[in-house]
Every structure is written in structure tokens, then in C-alpha cells.
Length: 475
Ligand code: FAD
Ligand code: AMP
Image (cartoon, rainbow, N blue to C red):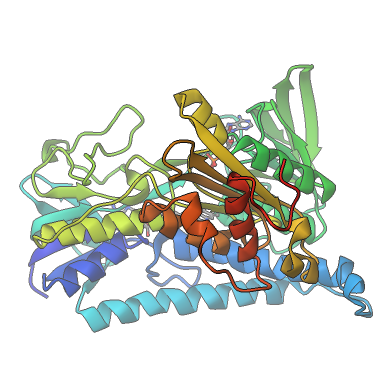
């Protein structure tokens, strides 16, 4: 391996590995430094997303949902089972196997694209030099025309309740429980808290979520959030809103949490607690102070709309920069930067990034919510359609929830689509494509949707924008 590259990427998560592959596709000599070590003690590409985030959480969400449905819902289909048992070790092993297969897949893609994969730690020095410290061995100096920083994020803790990997865990710890907790506390009812709380609730834990905000899922459209909250409470998730955890302490058998709400101060005893109060950018040890890369007031690397940092030819992408902490957002930034570096066109449309929460029902949205539009004084039309009237949703025995389409009152352009319901994360793609093409509600209305599909609910919601839904009474 030489020590001079066109591009050196620091971080091999969905932002960094995608940037590295695209840079190599563009004919640039590329290295990607990544520090992640898997549960087997070996380097493992894919970052948080593949190793401890998107993928293992979705594996457990799928398994736990099947377990729950086998126990509680199969009877609705006329399927009688004997005793349904849980083999958590096998469930965890399946998750591990998926992670290991996909992480190995990235290594294969690096080989095929001739990306030099460097396992170890990267540090940006002045003058576009990178110090690479391998897992074993002496630091080496690399030179690059362009450096892309993609070091991601790590979980934030609560000062008085440090992670101990046993009773007080972060999301990675909560994905690896070897036994189902009896009483599980979850601090923070954001995306991660809800997904992980759902996994362990379905597997039999008593789950209490403490959320500081008064409004459930404040980042989602209010109507959708209310519907989701109703469904989650029905599933037995004990959700406390306006409940700010102030402190916690280990007790002989578990953890005692103290939280404040409008009624006063309370204590909650749990056996284990997941702290899911957010994530912070990974910049420690990454930046030599003389490298000239500035951070913003929240500790993220400062970048412009094209992910240029304050240092020439140094770029930053993914969770380590502003914007939603989502894998696909980081990947698109990776593609943009790798294309710009190669002298091609690159752009990310930050207004059209889908968000998905993989609970049951799923929640997905893109664009602006009704609250956003009201606050901005935009005149809009809204159409909704309930899955209760969808033949496919009924056949699936998953008819809770709705689709909502928001369109500009004057131009009819789609401004936002919000879904709470079965496969919402898949359905939202249609809305993303429509919005990317600046489509109108009428465009969706005149598009043929196969019958019977869940996507018909999107079609009907678009029709409902103009009070022309066929399978609902237009009010
Ligand atoms: P990361 O994935 O964090 O990767 C950064 C990499 O850089 C890591 O491998 C790290 O070890 C390495 N690194 C850090 N510093 C250095 C250094 N100095 N030298 C070398 N290497 C370094 N997002 C979604 O879009 N969909 C989901 O369903 C979803 N589910 C999630 C579930 C959970 C439980 C969690 C925790 C997150 C989830 N996310 C999801 C968020 C998603 O994982 C992140 O947005 C995404 O991983 C960010 O990608 P990244 O490449 O910026 O950083
Ligand atoms: P997210 O940002 O999606 O990861 O969600 C984190 C959630 O944790 C947010 O909804 C925060 O309001 C919530 N949160 C942060 N700190 C606390 C706290 N001390 N007690 C309860 N909830 C918190």
C-alpha cells in the first residue's frame, strides 16, 4: 500500500463506506480507515448502522413481531398453535449472522472496487495529512488530495446514571440482552427508545418509557403521532410524557430513576434501563487543532450545503454533521461529496429525506407536517385515508392507522406525506419519488395503483385532498 491517495475517508459507516465506493467508482485511488471492532474482536465495516443500529434493530424487530403475532394474532387467522416458546439465544444468533454477513459484504465491495480498507484509527493533521494508527503497529502518515470525515456518532449518557453495560445500557447494550428484562425502563421515547422498547415489550418485558417532551413524537405530524401513541399504549407500552429523568442510581436488584413531571417528583424502580436520549457526534481524537476544521455550537463539524468543512479539500458527512441522524442521509452526502471531488455534479435534497420508525404500526413521513405548514403560514389542502378501509390491510389483519397527504392549496404540489400503518416505511418511497419530481396530488390521483395493495391507501389519501376519495366518505 502506498501512502498517497486521491481520497482518504475516515469512518466506514453508511456515510463513509458509500463515499469510498463512489470515489473508487469515479476512478480515484481511495482508502477508508475504520476503527469498529465486532463482537468477535475482528474489524467490522458498516459503522453503527450495520453493527449496532439499523440492521440488528430491524432483525430483532422482525423476530419479536413474529413471536408476538404467533402468540396473540395467529388465532385471528384461524391458525391454532401449541405453546409458543422463545429461544432468545437463537434469536440473537440470527441477528448476529445477519450483521456479520452484511459487514462482510462491505469488505467484499471494497475489494471489488479496489478501496484500500485500513482497520484502525484516523486523525486529521494539517495540510490534508492523515495519521493512521493500525490496530496493531506504529502510526503511519497518509497523504490525500481530499479527506472525507465520516466518524458518525455515539450514544449520549445521563450524567448521574453512567452506562454499565448490565443494568444501565445504551442502544447497543439493549440489542444484546441475553435475557428478557422483567421491568424495563426506557429514557427517551424517540425513534430508538420506541423501537427497542417495542422489541422487549413484545418479548414479554413490562416497559415504561419516560419522555421529557409533553408531545409524543414531537418531530412527526401531530395527527400521525396521536394515532401511533394510541396504538402503542394499546400494546401495553407505558408512556409517560413530560417526564424528565433527573437522576438514577443502582440498587441491589436494579435501578431507581427519579423523574419530574407536572404532578411533581416521582421514582421508578426497574430491573434494567435503556438510556436513549440522543447521540452526539464523534470528533474526539479526530481533529488536530491546527487542521483548521471548525465545529458548530452543538459540537458537529461545520459544513456548507455541499459538506465542505472550513479546511480546504476536507469534507464531512453523516451523523458527524448537521441534519437528521439517518443512514440514508449520510450515504447520499457520501455520494454527493465523492462526485464533487471527482468534478461531477453532486447535490442532496435536504427537504425530501424520508424518516421511518419501524414499530408496529410503522410510522413514516417525508416533507412538512401540518404543524410546520401552519407555522409557516402556507395555504394547504389535506387528505387522509384510514387503513381500516383497505382490503389488503384487512387481509393482513393490520388495519390500524392512516395515510395523510398535504398539498399546496394553490399549486397542488405535494408538501408532505405522513403514514402510520402497515409497511409505512416501504409506502413512503412513492411519496419521496413524487416529491423529488415536484409532483402534485393530482399526479398521485392519476397514477394507477395495483389492487389490492397497501399503496392504494396513498392513492386514496391523494384523492381525498380534493374530496374525491372513492372508498371513503369525503368530508
Ligand atoms: P456511523 O455509522 O456511526 O459510522 C462511523 C464509523 O466511524 C464507525 O465505524 C466508527 O467506529 C468509525 N470511527 C469513528 N471515529 C473514527 C476514527 N477517528 N478513525 C477511524 N474510524 C472511526 N438510521 C436509519 O436511517 N434507519 C434506521 O433504521 C436506523 N436505526 C438505528 C437504530 C439504532 C439502535 C441506532 C443506534 C441508530 C439507528 N440509525 C438508523 C441511525 C444510523 O445508524 C446512523 O445515522 C448512521 O449509522 C450514521 O452513519 P455514519 O456513517 O455517519 O456513522
Ligand atoms: P432521539 O433524539 O430521537 O434519539 O430521542 C431522544 C429523546 O429523549 C427525545 O425525545 C428527548 O426529548 C428525550 N430525552 C432527552 N433527555 C431526557 C431525559 N432526561 N428524560 C426523559 N427524556 C429525555
